Image (tube, rainbow, N blue to C red; front, side, top):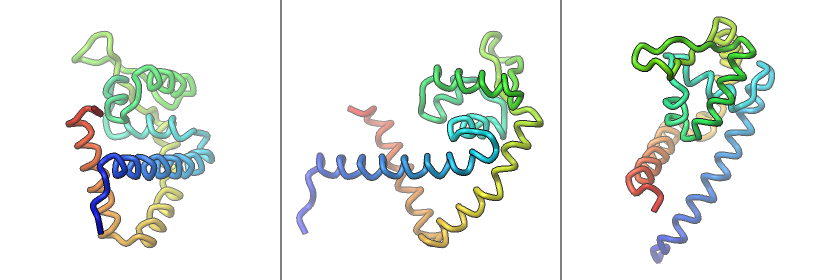
Length: 149
């Protein structure tokens, strides 16, 4: 078997990742909907579940723009699912954190999320799932190193 041209490999990788992204977003929308969230709102709220973060930190971690995270964070705050707290490290960059209601909302998604996760791991196998995650991380790290150029 002949090695594929790097451009063809990149195209095949991108096409596969784009499809996977669409599949994961569709699944996330289905999981989040009963809790009254969108996938994007679930993602932002979930990112601060373990510790408060600034909007800029959230955007970096999620690989999206600060402006889109700011818009979602403000919506979460307006709905009473999150709040801004003072940031001792930076006077102007407030920390976003879930409220009790926000945590309850996140917890309400957990059972359906766990069922989907179990079905996926059962379909693929635990070792293969771990290999897939490792491969995706390697790909992301390589793209970070070359900065997309």
